[in-house]
Length: 184
Ligand SMILES: [Zn+2]
Ligand SMILES: [Zn+2]
Ligand SMILES: [Zn+2]
Image 1 (spheres, protein in one colour):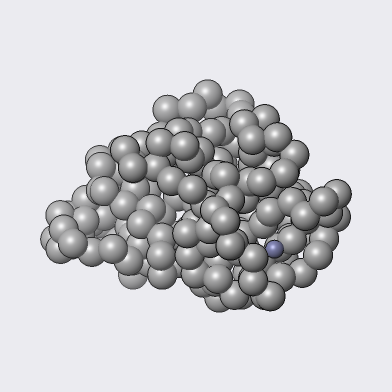
Image 2: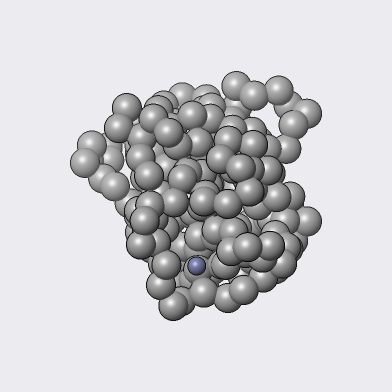
């Protein structure tokens, strides 16, 4: 069945305003009005960036998260955009860019980079949260790795968050809200 061109915009208008689940998002960058949906604000930010960059950073606009940064790809993906939408090279480049930003802001220890699970996402455009680690962040669900290319791909809808541990990295898995490990 062919979907009429105007359907995404109409469908978005019919969605309840309190909807927090981004899994049914219908935005289409070719139809700018569809990016006006609240859950698609980061797609709109990506479209404002120069076309020839791959990744970019934004300060978290939430006033209670002033010390946070977000790392985002310039390109779009599915609804929501997932790491599995990317090639291994894109994923590695994306994590590496976020790690470089974290080191630039907080130095080589004490920071974390978190991808929330799909249930906790409020934006369809993928975004990594970058921030300073809170005390007591550690738990036992992690793998020890040496480079961004080894960060495990989270299973269906799970999140993952990473932090430096000496000269290596911990990648914490099976986590929906890794963001909560970071200072606001
Ligand atoms: Zn969207
Ligand atoms: Zn997008
Ligand atoms: Zn750890």
